[in-house]
Image (cartoon, rainbow, N blue to C red; front, side):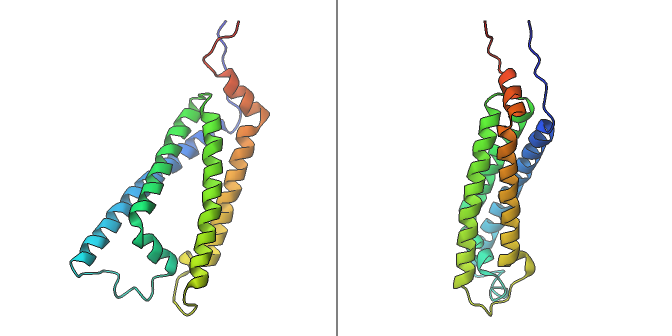
Length: 176
């Protein structure tokens, strides 16, 4: 007898979102690496394109540019993981459910740590330094809270009895 597992509501959407966001995250990481390398190369030749804007750069943007290799690597690695997990989640591979939960926990922890570091950088910076709304601590905090909320929703979703049962039923093993 061949078992056919039914896909619970939300599995396809979750898998597609995970895969699409992962792909875009990888692309963003690659573009960030290219821009960072270009900025560094121009700076080494004495043509720092951010020299005039240095006073206007907020502390977070400056820190990200100073460590562009690590930032780009993190984006590419997490993007690739999200892409692979999303595709496997769509295929309802049994390993994809716990992998997505682990990814959500890692992103949740990383978000909290990076937001703490961001707020520390802002606290130590010059309060008179100009910045824009997109790089402000308030925007960062709001985006981090939204990301934490999304991670909590994902963790609850993959732990739900219907999703657990569907991924168990989709396992290729045979039971006798």
